Length: 286
Image (tube, rainbow, N blue to C red; front, side, top):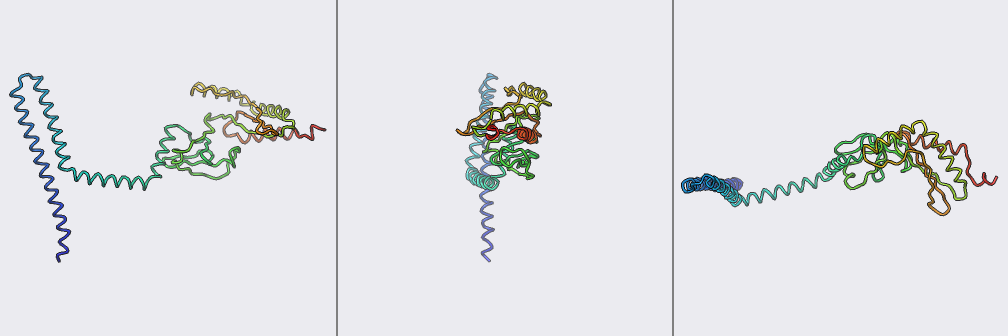
């Protein structure tokens, strides 16, 4: 029978403590009001200058507010300390439980503020590469392009990237020039093959396939240069030479293309050159 009285006694103890705090708070408030009233009356009677009187009244009011604040902190200090510990514990638990969600929201704010990419852009982050088709506050959806980093065909797979990845990983935007892009691909040759003829053939073929819209590309690049204040490279097709190893020559072909036709133009140029030319050593010896 007496066991049931324990919770009731605890509730009464808590109520008594709270009542004591409320009583002390009321006494403090009445004391501050009375003290301010006495000080104001004294200032109005003893200080003749209106300007000085107003200054002392304001200073007295501010002093009373400080006394009230420090008094409340002294009275409620223990309760405030307990409440602060509870709030901190809840906040820490909330952050730990929702860490990934917070990182996703932070990544969304980061990529939006930095204007990293837009819908339709082709991006690469870590091993994920593709065309952006959707983005929200938690994730970004892309249609995968590959395989690898050198091909431009969609694989038919969709990838959902959590926005938390954009906080710690760099993003490569392959479509920053939007409608037209400068597409680059590499063709390797052996050192003793006729790579000079190949260089001329690739340049000729690139000019042929780019000619229908080359003027439009130049106008677009000029517009971007003026709008963004950038030195946009020339839009004319180029074929440059690289020597990665002593026995190899790499031809680097750069062509301006429509952003949606990168793979088509690359395959067209390769098919055109290799179906009409033979750069092998055997051909040269004959």
